[in-house]
Length: 260
Picture (cartoon, rainbow, N blue to C red):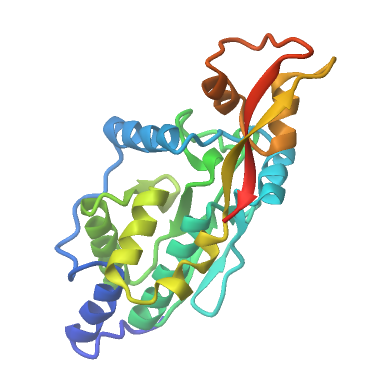
């Protein structure tokens, strides 16, 4: 087992300060709650994230650039992750946290879950889980209680900063973390002067413009959304329509992806 690399307590606090604005206070319980799920789902709605239903749909999100690979590096590793993809801000979070965790604890951070389609959720998963949106990840609990205390302190501080919700789950034991993408990206930009390097992959994620599309015979909202890399809900909102009925010859405003 690795020793906790404090160099005295000072090193651990100094490293944590690179991730949070100040040294973490004593960790709270990190208990899950209905209120926490409410917050996570509200953030997903605010970002207009789809809840991905199948592996095939997840691959389309990867192809469109909405989800990026999370591969692991010298500071963190993946264990039994079926779909190693997440929102760009989640990948940024794991990279930053992994670097600080390895430097402090002398062991790699272990990611056990990332984006999970709804048809691949475990039986004990909440129906309101945001894993299918790509904004959540699970981390293994370390056997070293000092490492657990450090990580829980960091997660608690980031919760207080309003950039994530974290829960220490018991069955099976792990940390569930839901990242608030826009808030987290702004937070990192604010606390570091290395924005171009740290946010490079986030900045290259696709954004949307709105294009005119003339409905053709046989079109459906789902097919139009899929071809343009957007969602049915976004098309409905842009055109102020309800339901799924569209007519050939009708012109729709359709959000379409483009690179920043």
